[in-house]
Image (cartoon, rainbow, N blue to C red):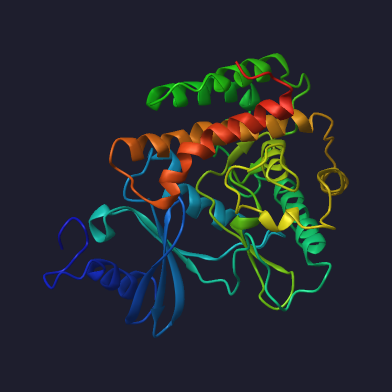
Length: 346
């Protein structure tokens, strides 16, 4: 078996086919197809005699090992099994990179679809309200999980989590900066000056929570599973809430960054950010007094992360429509963060 997992016949999935048959009880594999995504872990649909499965592995040009940890994704899925948080069932993990070019996780396939800029025709007129409510209800359930009882002690460093965010992501941004974006530092200064004094009770974070990282029934607005857990950790739960509500509804720029994400939330009659925040507060039993800070942090942090992908594009490692769009999307995210913070552009 060669390092990229291909066989002598040139099949890039040969090693994976053999491993799945021997270790994941799939039966003989009939088809493996890569599903389209952004810069998250690569996702493959496996059709086998034993059913349909999902395989997740780091992308070809992973920005860092920690950002695409398969062990992390597998561990949190196992911990959430049997909780009120709907997740795919983790079936197996392979840490041998020679099988498929990188470690990977095998999980059950969930019959659902991600939603971005359009809704299934079967949905009724109140669909976006139901989507928003179920989204924040799932988030409240996640943040209510007893992560220590679930076996996630040591999964993150909750002490000082929020205080570390600006230092960590400023350093990350500076390590691969390929252009001058002065708004980044202006917003960083605002975040340092407006850090909430009272820390939140630590909880299990998804790390990239929004409508598009959920799978929904095609028949009705029903949440089937929350997916893409590679950035999960233990820390301040409002970091999750800040991201999904920063990308919800009206955006403070003419053309929002990453415009397809939660685009359905900008239709007339969609629940407001304030309504969803209050619903979350009631269900999670957490104050959301400092929500503006968390929305600014979310947009600024997302810009820091995505600039790494844009740097890969500039360096010739990543060439896709998604990567090219970051030339405008990263500065726009920073402009949105500055608008929410009331920071004047330098």
